Amino acid sequence: MNSISTQLAPALEQIIQETFNASISEFEFQATRKEFEGDITLVVFGLLRTIKGNPVQIGETLGTALVERLEWVKGYNVVKGFLNIEITDAFFINELKEIRTTSNYGTVALDKASATVLVEYSSPNTNKPLHLGHVRNNLLGYAVANIIEASGKKVVKTQIINDRGIHICKSMVAWQDYGNGATPESTGLKGDKLVGNYYVMFDKKYKEEIAVLMSEGKTEDEAKANAPLYIKAQQMLRLWEAGDQEVVALWKTMNTWVYAGFATTYSAMGVSFDSYYYESETYLLGKDLIEDGLSRSIFYKKEDGSVWIDLSDEGLDEKLLLRSDGTAVYMTQDLGTALQRYRDNPSMTGLVYTVGNEQDYHFQVLFLVLKKLGYDWAQSLFHLSYGMVDLPQGKMKSREGTVVDADDLMVEMQQTAQTIAEDLGKLDGLSVEEKALLYQTIGMGALKYFILKVDPKKRILFDPESSVDFAGNTGPFIQYTYARIQSILRKAEHVQDELKLDLNIDPREKEIIKHLMLYPTVIQQAAKAYSPALVANYSYDLVKLFNSFYQNVSILGETEDAVKAMRVALSSEVASVLHDSLGLLGIQVPDRM
Image (cartoon, rainbow, N blue to C red; front, side):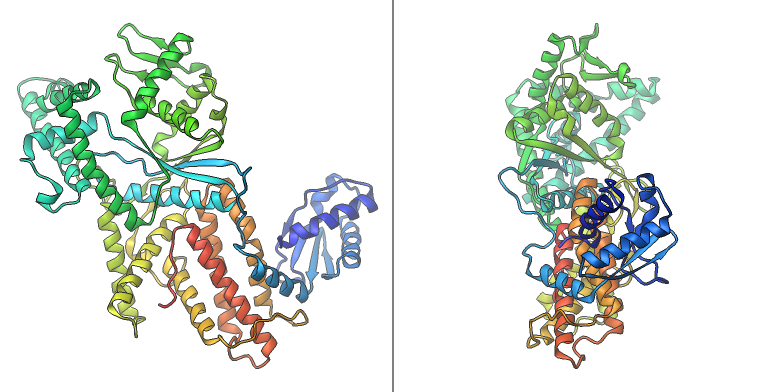
């Protein structure tokens, strides 16, 4: 049950070998233009590099031979250097039959020899709640992991939690100075939001201190370095790294609050993880790696004691690996995390880092450093670099409290879905509980689809309202088509479940089957490109084809039983592929809308 081109290729290869005594295994196919008869077109011009001759005559020779050898090729025509190939209706009905009887159609089953790929996403800081940028990160990483798994590889969904560093200490200092013992229980706030509030408060108080120092004659840089709050945060970081019991106890308490908040957000978002790594643990392994690199002269130490690597021979510059006071930088912990992941997953054949494109340089350096340290698996590391999510009101800043909170966004999506659905009057007969679940399904489907339909490399301007539109290239439009098919199938319970091969099928039906046949290839392509957008837009194209069929061809009103059975079966398979393709994106589909 391969695509038409894949099934034609072996026959063409054999014909060319026998007729022209030439070897060609790669062929260029395209959809036949609407003004010509045919279901698929072979571009003959591409063969002229190997076969010499008139492209029209070569096309005629190949067309004649295909009709003779393949019973499912019923005819052909040649237009200049294009061989338009016509396929029998029986071929398409048989393909539909095979699709129906293939379990988990489109996916490749895992076996013991399957490669293991780790996909990292989320990677939050424990000083603030998840925001809109994290939403794209999580949805993208989770979908990529699902797609890679569907392509036949074992996948480990993982994250690194940035639970140490000066930014964490800033929240801790602000809580100590201004918190008055506040807890999630005493405030009624989610733990991540509570801690995030103190991160914002630190920034506010820090700026006030800087202003005072500058008014006393200090430069801005001097004021920033000598502000009492900042000095206190630096001291706390040193105490933490020294294992001070009181500081470590507070750090553990506040992190526990944050983790509980994150868990709630991940659940609402519909994402999950198989393994967790913590910077507070991996940075130590990173320090060991740096000592190893120093001993082998891969790294060097400056007079102030800081450790660097010179990558100028790679077209880059010098990179700091360890500060002069011995404290770690992001690169330190990323080196340690990479090594720990390999040790935990020795069968690892790939590691995908889902991180925004502002970190492109960081990952270039990380991969190079690991290669210079002699790790062969560093060749299989990949940075899934994605564009930022923009809002009409401008850029978000966590420390200033101007971010779009992930929890608030998901609630807003649900409310927007409710408003639009009620305005359209599509909710008759549903209970209050069913409506609430539907709003959630539509709202989250709209959010996920809006973000995932865009190529990861591109920036997104996010507009909640347009994402919940019930028409166009949106999640709700696809969900509505799925629900419409479920309604058809409920009414077709007593339609016979047998496909006859001697039917004449409508061109629209043929186009749907062709598109269904592409689904396995799309999964492989999306896995290779790390692009859920390919799956999202495949789903949308399938919906457009089905809706054209639905509006022009009678399904349940068809009087001939065999034709009705075929159309019901076709509708069922469209729904099945929509269910599965959207499932790869983490999107649920409702039975009723």
